[in-house]
Image (cartoon, rainbow, N blue to C red; front, top):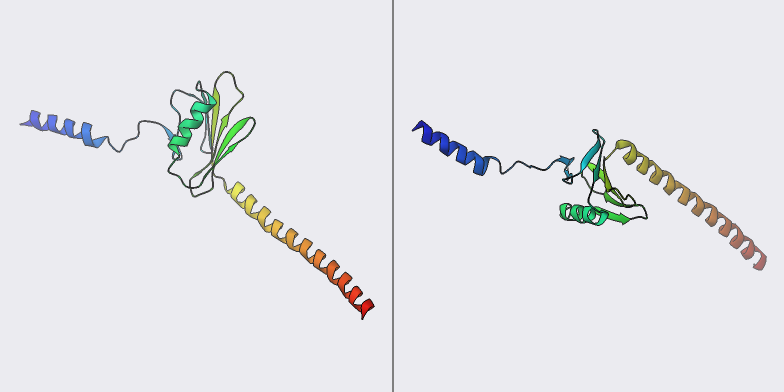
Length: 152
């Protein structure tokens, strides 16, 4: 009886117990590509060097992130930059292009300095635009009022 119960327990755990476990590593919900060498890992950033080509790595991350709605992919000369504009804990994935010994993948965490800096720049930018509008409207108002006085 004990032997049968033990076999049933092992069978149950092997079928249902490990279904929720992820065998691949991830960083802040982003899967780390397998077969790569971990260069650096901290709580803010992970850097991986993989023997795969840039296109293979890009295809992997496009497939892995296809269900996320706020993903922007920017193709630059030296790298491809995948950015999350939504609520994910990670900020970006940078996939290098110009490395003959493999592809470097850097995943960075969303930082408060980045968030606050962006908000401050937008706040200042709004007032700069409003200042230009004020100066432009003041000049046009002064010119129009002088023209109206001369003709009237």
